[in-house]
Image 1 (cartoon, rainbow, N blue to C red):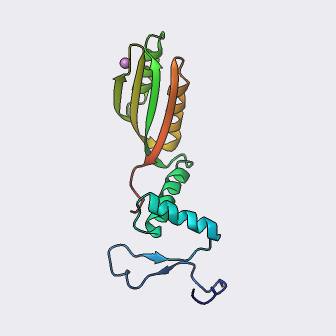
Image 2 (cartoon, rainbow, N blue to C red):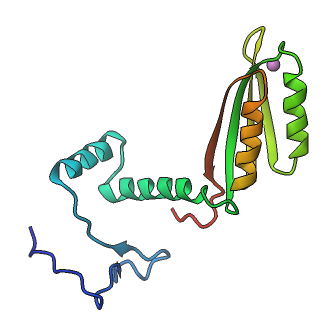
Image 3 (cartoon, protein in one colour):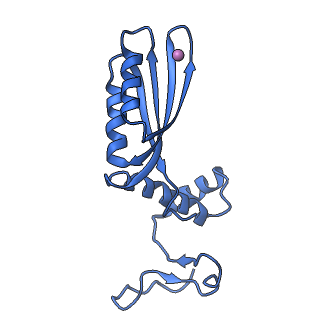
Length: 164
Ligand code: NI
């Protein structure tokens, strides 16, 4: 296509602001990456299959997803998420145990949804928001409670400091 890429030197900035877009609200940064041909082809296939208008939008979403995943590893990072639990409410103490844990952390659990799936099984979805460490601890405690058949913490972002 174009001329061969110049080797990076310390003087050369890795990322350059696009002067055309710099005047708009969010400056756009352009940089080139090198990928094996087959990988690039599959990226383009996925971009198309998922309905993205272009490769940049698909890659930006992938970066955001990884940032969200990465940040949850920092214990004092504010995160949001859901804890999903399935349990048999006939099992002794399970409901009381889960309720006790939730009341202990009422400042972090901002909402709870309970669905009676059938005669035995309950599905509970808790919306949580707070420090990553604490949320993981609460999720572990709930999921490990005796009588819980399945549980899962899904972490997302509070939306702050994550540009679109
Ligand atoms: Ni129920």
